Image (cartoon, rainbow, N blue to C red):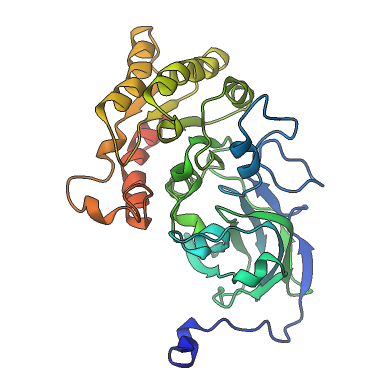
Length: 356
């Protein structure tokens, strides 16, 4: 049965005959955010290119080509917009929507208004091998400059990416965000965004959108093992805050206890006043693992550190409706991510000394 013949809302429209000028989305005046070690001319990557298995595990190296947390920002008065993408790698999983793993979310801020979700590009399996070219059919109709944020896939990588606009349209750099320095998240598949229904519904992106801050997402599915080489590289970055959430990927309590506090101390030594949030796992939580993460916090506070916070992830989903917060007992769905966002936001606001 072809569901699109019954319900037109499931149809994927063709590009049509609109006049389109394509721009390289990884070049100025477009702003690429979320990739602190990336340089123009390279394919997008989330870890330093010089890293090998001597610095981090092979899983993190492979997943560093995924674009989780990445975004393209710009302003334009174009009356329409299209996208043309060649994937570097394409991930399609049983328990996560393809829109989340390989799609693109469009958010638009119209003149005088707030940023709003408009639509999502929905790739098909054949786009793993073929170019994805599609028009954003839901697009603002008001005339004037619009601020565009295009959120990139959580579990796929990009080889080339172009944005198509009307030939005579203005294309300008984005306005500065309220926070000039990014918030960096380090953690597991949950940090990377599994299993959000679409890219912007990861809790990390919800937080950065609410705070109007750039994001760096170093979530590595099954592969955040707390290596000191990565901590040292993170410590070199100028950050607004750091969220440490890799409890889930420590293979056992002994590994977590061995790596967690040393990872924290590397950052703290380099940046004595950086706000650091320590999170324990949000699902399948145990008291033993929570206490290891909490011990890092307690030791820091006992040493006089007032710029560190601890959040018990076991409380994120709340007392009611916990069974509705994951897709598989472990990975959050959109409700689970939203509850994580609600729990972490006020603590980040306090840490950043922002009004609630």
